[in-house]
Image (cartoon, rainbow, N blue to C red; front, side, top):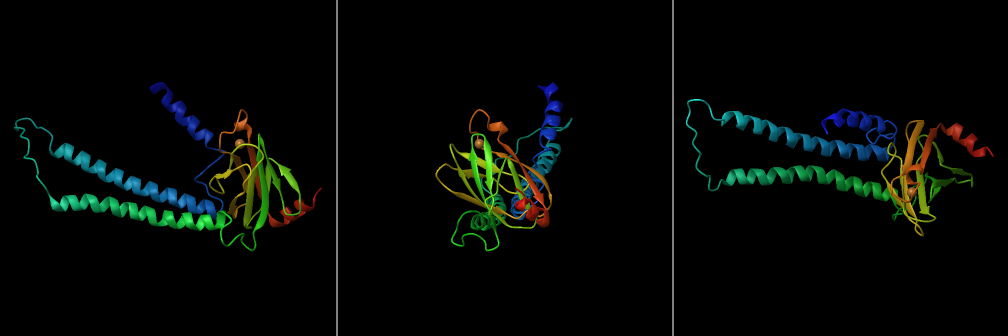
Length: 232
Ligand SMILES: [Cu+2]
């Protein structure tokens, strides 16, 4: 097992090069990344405090030469200690819960056809997932396969459906995942803020060639997008 450790680390890092969750390039991805950092920060805080206390107590109460080890009497109850270790987790969970619930509601109203419906200025892209490719249809009827072209700084609303089984649409740099269901429409929206190439893929195991169900997302300037839309 030990021999496998470094190769594993190298592979884990290399395989992460293409699709990075923690490299947000849209408003939606920013929100999600901030939540990940917040929960990671809280986790590290707990971990560090526990480890420091652990090492401190190990040193303080270790058995030394020449000292007689005696077991301290059991503490029956300690109201303040009990209050402390009840209140601290509640506080930590509250710090985590408030922004999480808020982000969930914010993203949902942007994402699904909620009461507001589409944003006024959103560009609509229809997405069909099928074994094993993606079809994108733009507002003027233009279609592309396995290549999603988007203008920078423009809110895009995806309306997704499937021709066969359940798929999942995922461009880690730009958004979270959204299920793509047969016979039903799901929605997702985000606003890319940087030109570039972003890998997308199907994130739901959907059959033998599931791993090949990838697509490129090209975010280009608004002018380049306009002229691309006019091309045959
Ligand atoms: Cu799929």
